[in-house]
Amino acid sequence: VNGEAIYGTRPWTVYGEGPTQVKAGAMNEPRSGFTAADIRFTTKGDALYIFVLGRPASGSATVAALASGRGMKAVKTLTLLGSHERITFDRDVSGLRISFPTQTPDQPVYVFKAEGER
Image (cartoon, rainbow, N blue to C red; front, side):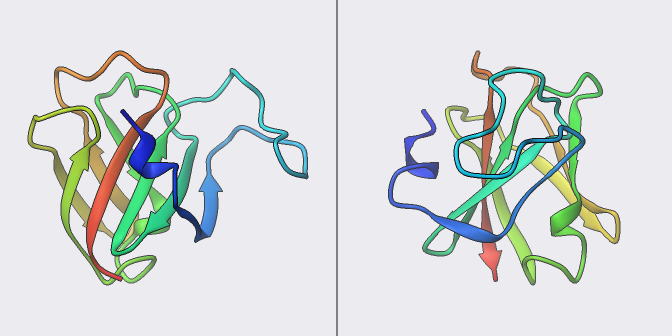
């Protein structure tokens, strides 16, 4: 489901954000203990992939790295890989708030594809 966000991608200018602390070095992230506030990024072409490492109980996640004036000039479309539901979002100085659809794929990581002006 998330292959396009992994294979052939490059690191984005921001590695990630969130409360879970990880050891320095490659491949040192824990396999569990992440929350919906833990977010990672990759990029390919004009797309930015946003990995939300847990489903938020509130039904929405905020991506601080994509606050107005940061990260991307504009986010025009946002899709959840593996879902056909329309994703609603808004953006302000605190970040990009993503509303999760009511039906989501059963997976430990949710990957959103953001397209717009970078």
